[in-house]
Amino acid sequence: MFEDGELRRHTRKARRIYAARRDFLANELIHELGDHVFFNTPAGGLAIWLGMRPGLSAVIWASNAARAGLTIAPGLRFTLNAAKPPEAFRIGYVDLDEANLRGVVTLLADSCPIQ
Image (cartoon, rainbow, N blue to C red; front, side, top):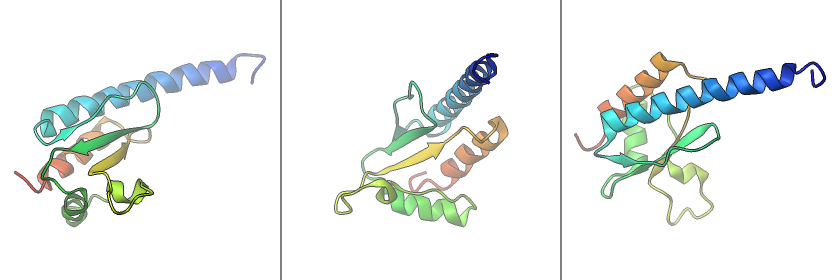
């Protein structure tokens, strides 16, 4: 795999696909939720950390989303300081196509505690 360049070709292809999915998700988030969230588009990685504007609770939003059929973990699940959890979600995008990513954003928008 190393000698014939197969791994290098696979890595380049995966980077292109993941970057396209990241960019698609970022655009959908801005378009649908731009007034309620903020994030930095990562240069690499497999997920976007989606922060919430003041007044929004990630726990309440995640609960609303679960009732709509979307399971998403609030920042509380990713912190060592449970007394001050981040009001955020981690949204992975590498295993979702554009239709699935659009569906995730639609469910998030529909379940936002502030409409």
